[in-house]
Every structure is written in C-alpha cells, then in structure tokens.
Length: 372
Ligand SMILES: Nc1ncnc2c1ncn2[C@@H]1O[C@H](COP(=O)(O)OP(=O)(O)OP(=O)(O)O)[C@@H](O)[C@H]1O
Ligand SMILES: [Mg+2]
Image 1: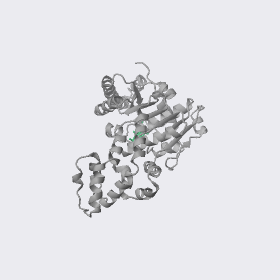
Image 2: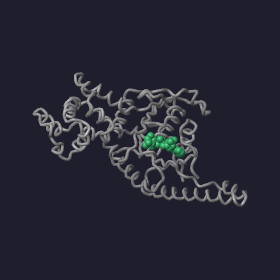
Image 3: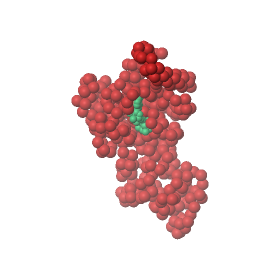
Image 4: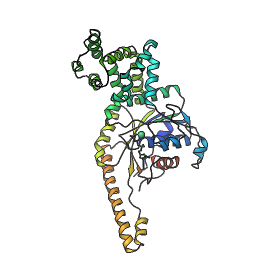
C-alpha cells in the first residue's frame, strides 16, 4: 500500500475542516493537524469544540470562550521538537459567537431585544444545523481577519451530513421565512394568540418553530422574528461567504470515522455529498483501528507457562479478530470511496489527551508510521 499522508495538505491549504459523526476523533485529529503544521513551520490556529478538559489544559486553554491562545513554545519543545512557527488554539463558544453575530448585524435599537429574547436564547442549541453553522461562520470570520497560515476547524458532532452542508441554507431559510412573519405578526396584533403554528405549513422554519411552542410564547416568537428580519441582508451575505470558503481550493475536508461496518454507509454518503458540493475531501481518517497483535507478542506468549499462555493467547486471538473485522471494514470503505485516500490511526491504549499523544497520532496522519 502506498503511503498516504496529510503532509502535503498541511503545507499548502489555508483551511482544514475535520468532520464526522459523534465521538470518532474529530477534535483529536484537528488538534494533531494544527500541532504538526506549526512544528513544521506554518503558523496555525486550531479551533476546537468542546475539547476534553485534559486536552484543553494541555493546549493551555482556559475556560475563556473564543480566546485565541498561543501554546507556549516550551510546551511544544517538551515534545523534543523545536517548533518553526507558532501554534494557537481556541475553544469555540457557540453562544458567544451567536451573540457577536447579532451584536454586529442587528440594528442598535433591536440588539437588546434579540439578545434578551428567550426564543433567541434557545436558538443556538435547538435549531438543527445552527451549531454547525456557527462553527463555519466563525471559521469564515477568522479566515478574513487573521493571518494564520493555516486554520484547522474542529466541528460539532454531526448526525446527518446534510445538517452540516445545509447549515448556511437552513439558517437563511429560517431567517427568511416570510410565511412565519406574515402569519404570526398580524395574528398577534389582532390578539389572536391562539393561532396554531400548524397553519404555517410544512416549511423547515415552521417545523423548527413548532418545537418551541411548549417553552416560548407566540408573542416572544413574533417579536423575535420581527427583530431579526432587520438583519437578513448581513446574514445572507455571510452565509454566501461561508459557502464559498468551503468550496475554495485552499480549503480541504478531513472526514474522520471509526472502522466499524455500521459506519460505512454514513461515511460514504458524507464523502459523496461533500464531493457533489464541490468540496475537496483530502482523506478519510479511520481512527481507533485495532492493529494485528505483532508476532513478537505471540512469541512472548509461547514462552509463558501453560496456564498463563492459554490466557494471553486468548486475548491475542480476540485482538486478532477485532483487527480482522476492522481490516474488512476498511477494505469495503476503500471500495466504496475509490478516489479518496484512506489513513488509518490505531486505537491507542489511552485517550489522546496530551501533546505527546497528539504527536503520536500525527505520525500516522503524516505517514511517518503505518499500521502494519
Ligand atoms: N486513536 C485513538 N486511540 C485512543 N483514544 C482515542 C483515539 N482517538 C481519539 N481518542 C479518544 O476518544 C475520545 C473521543 O475523541 P474526540 O474527542 O477527538 O472525538 P470527537 O469526534 O471530537 O467527539 P465529539 O463528536 O463528541 O466532539 C477522546 O477521549 C479521545 O482522547
Ligand atoms: Mg469533538
């Protein structure tokens, strides 16, 4: 098998976006790529989402949302390497990013009304695609106003690829929903509070709105829709910018997945959607692959006393079965995505929560080491 590496992408891309479903290793891969790029000479920013506390600590990140923090050179030097460029990291605070967006785009007289509206306060978590959108929005802003040579974006766990790709459209659809405004506003003005959202039909926005009826009053909903309608143009323009950035030739996607057969359809679908949308998939990273137990381990087992040997060989056999299952899944994945490089990262004994473990992960992403 030829060596596959994300090295060339780290040298020439300006933006890398790590995507995939929940818990597969997106944050780990994003942090690793930023680390390697900086050590190899490109100033980098890793924008993480909900990193494990220990990983955040090891990158020197405190609880401060959205603060870009330089990882001290001496922390990197403890890895035994001399970084050629600076590494910055941040934790994306979704709520704060939404607030910044509203503050920037809402007319001053509407700002407070939107920010204090209870409906708005649940928007950032309840609207499907809104988490994905705000991460992309932040990326776009960082790309425009900073001069990092590389920005690596971690993304929220995405159950459906479409939530991710459609995020800008969904937000626009939601903000743009004339039907909702038209129906809600006159009804409320006329005092018909009992209006059923069912009347709004089956638009995406209506479905979203109806989720809130239990928690929010229609009055609040209506004033939110009215207030936010004043900022549509700014949003629309930015959403367009976000979409363009994702298609830019200096942007690439790294699709992270687990080696299980049940994941195959999902990841194949995700990669084909990205490609259909003219987004470049640089690699499929299959993370936490069980490697075959090495011959040395079998030889060691053979030297043990009978009783212990049986036990150890049982474990080695179990590991062998897991490795074979993973290998079969990866073969299927390669057949389903013939034009996309596949990079395998082994399952390490411990979580990847410090820089040494990130460095080790990087050896596989960069092709310095491969699962045999
Ligand atoms: N190759 C690996 N070997 C062992 N542990 C790993 C490996 N890759 C990731 N992990 C651990 O698995 C957990 C999940 O990884 P990570 O947080 O990167 O996933 P994620 O895709 O970002 O998750 P989420 O969707 O919840 O954001 C973490 O504790 C991480 O340290
Ligand atoms: Mg994560």
